[in-house]
Length: 330
Image 1 (cartoon, rainbow, N blue to C red):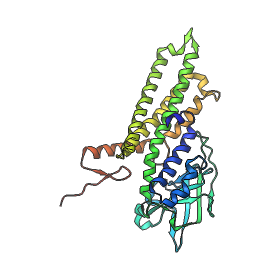
Image 2 (cartoon, rainbow, N blue to C red):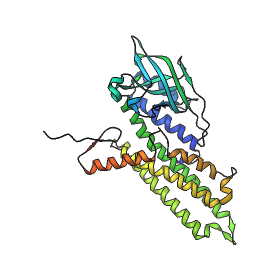
Image 3 (cartoon, rainbow, N blue to C red):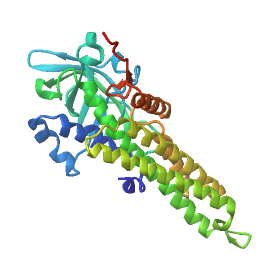
Image 4 (cartoon, rainbow, N blue to C red):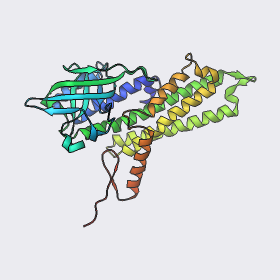
């Protein structure tokens, strides 16, 4: 996966959202009819899908989600705005997380599949981002969007579970993105250091440069191993939330570290658009803050810490990796 991402950070975002947060969720939770309708043209490269949980006012705070789904006699009616939607301008279908029963908070949240050409669905402006510019990002606006009753993905009231399942998978994808960006930056630095002559020899022979490259290489390999472990646990059907968070946290910071040091090795040439170093650095910044507003490095640190605490004690974790309070013995 990270070999693809080594070529283009924007492509990595498109693929991760499509595979983990759209097609993967329909494959896991969808009915036979939903799979027949929303998967064939989405797995042969014809179409892409998108996913929406974040909102302009509440981010990914599901309990305070403002997008609503109202059930009527023969259809659902959705209203609200979803923000930071990757693939929004290209997608043909949308997995949308909405509040169907606010009195139940996160247990009232339901996931839906919505065709992007549904009446009442519109797109906000295409965001002009710092990096990952090959991937479109926009708001999706729902105004009395009517969809059939069988548009529910999974079960009613289990939308929070559906969303978090996709996000866990996407963390592995974004970790792979970080590794790909870091490896591309490392390749750039190695090639330049081997050709740039200073004081009669390539700067690759200078110890200061060698030390930078060594630190870069170690971080890339550590990130790669963490990501492979998380992916292996997922493939084996074992809990992997903590490992995916570790991988994403480490790989994201590795991408920033390596791309920064790539620019340092290139010197002035690292600051110009003629060289790919500046693009790698811009792309790396998305890796530490992606998937959702709360899915950044600091939240990953808290999740890893709480997960470790639960492993060493008698605590249990909820679906999002938070430690549940212990039940008192009677």
